[in-house]
Length: 304
Image 1 (cartoon, rainbow, N blue to C red):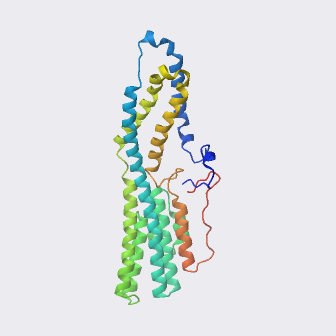
Image 2 (cartoon, rainbow, N blue to C red):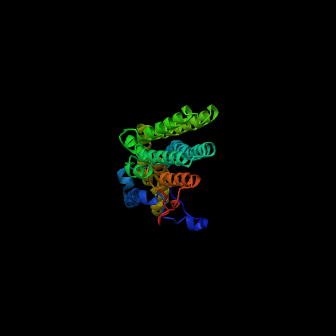
């Protein structure tokens, strides 16, 4: 996720870091070469029988803009849902830790639950990004829970199961009441819902055929566009054509990037930072020191 400090609107127009421009500059260069070729070939249009007008391009451009807007809205809806889910995870983990601390008043139980909750968030992070969670789990979970989780093919689900088993043991021992058991179990169910919803977003991409046909149409449109403009714009064709191409290509790229919000691209969610926030909250609520530092953006304003 790109996090930049506030700056003047005019200066923000020239931002390079955090912009999609570095990722599409090669595509814009291709459009620039086509535009220059169209200007060079202009004297030969009559002999070649080329007479393109802007009318059909206006109609196609409107259609592309509508479908591109729909694609961008769909991608942002996935991104926003993912961010809301992780925000809810922070709320639920706080609630569980508060309930355990205020009712049981046992430091050992509070710290064990905190370890489970922190491990759950980091394990879900690694699961969604397709990375190995071993290092984080080894520093967070004590034995014999660590071996149990590491031996499971579904580590995040196993941690949630261990939390449920701990809750059941306390209930059977008479340490918590029926009402408190139901309240904590409701929060555990909410964690399961968050995990399942994140897995749904991660495992269900936008239909490939829809993205492919839109990409093909945008690239073909931007490639042919200079030949329709060159009769009227002449030597201004490269500048106008590149500007219009930038609008379409940048929207297409942003939609492609944020449709998978759990990755490590510049505009994806900062899962590491959110997991660190959950870890700090849990450690502070249970008196565990020292607290880790909050994550800050790097020199490129990227927060992972």
